[in-house]
Length: 179
Image 1 (cartoon, rainbow, N blue to C red):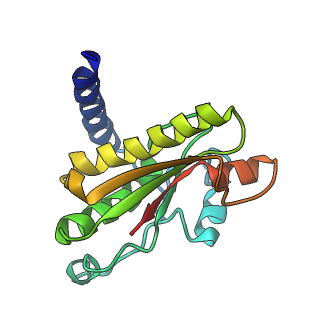
Image 2: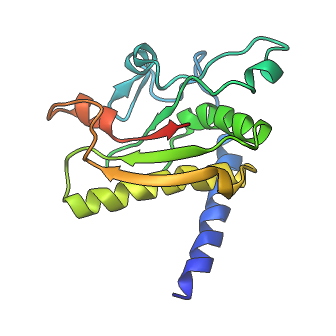
């Protein structure tokens, strides 16, 4: 198909534009962007911090080089309902993975895309793949070699949380870094 190369260029350009636009945004002290109560797409900042999956690790002065040799602690990023757009609050998490991957060229990662149970099986498989692909494009734009990354789409098949409520759905809309 002829449009595929153009779509990749467009996705790359949009990713760069998003990064440039988000670079000037402020966040709260814990690095989370969102509303005044700390919530973002159904997951409050305090819930995300308690689960240990949505906040980035902090490194003191001089510890950055040493910490880049370790796999980042936060290995899950979350998405809004029916979306494959990376939210700005997860950029610090992605940046830590970029640093790790660039400093450890022999490391490889599998990006596991997931969705909640709403939607057809086929739609959820495609959406979970688009989410993982969006993370892969972000890493590639930041200089991570494509040979270090594999993408797997699980759709709704491997939920992180059981239940039919917004809290469970929000935990299932995710991409997991599996090293």
